[in-house]
Image 1 (cartoon, rainbow, N blue to C red):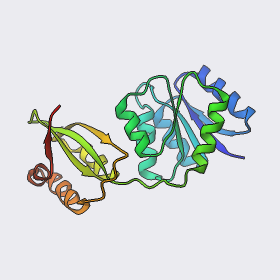
Image 2: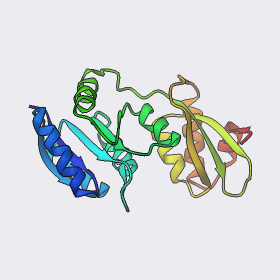
Image 3: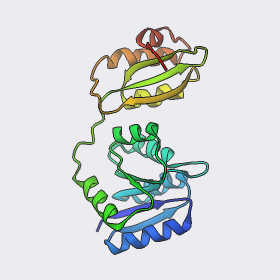
Length: 201
């Protein structure tokens, strides 16, 4: 039997979703109402799949996906939401995380679970991002791996970092970007600025 955890800040939705999962014989190991709890529950139970709401106070579904995928890249996640913007859609597409829209139907849940387990391609190719430096009004683009993207977003000199096209296969200059990130961690942004291309808004 497939096991899962369910995360949503609305307990009524958790209850309804768990009832639907029981009908299709999915074993719910645990539930939570916050994204931070989701990460702890995943580490504790190692379920086959995680269902997480996107919009939650404090630690949301975006936090769940990024933090679980960073530690467990093979983890299978499904996002459940009534409101998905393009930035989230690009990230979820890149990480092979399907989205179920609210209000959800049992057939859609069943099909999504089947698709998740049938998808053998979980590799994440380099992709293009757009961002700004905090002291600069221009937007820039460059190509990064997923880990580089996560590290770039954490740099204090970077703001408004987003994925442009997760489906574009860009398998080049990985080493140069890593060198640029290493230098930026030491407050030297010259190399990352050199690699970045100015784009229009």
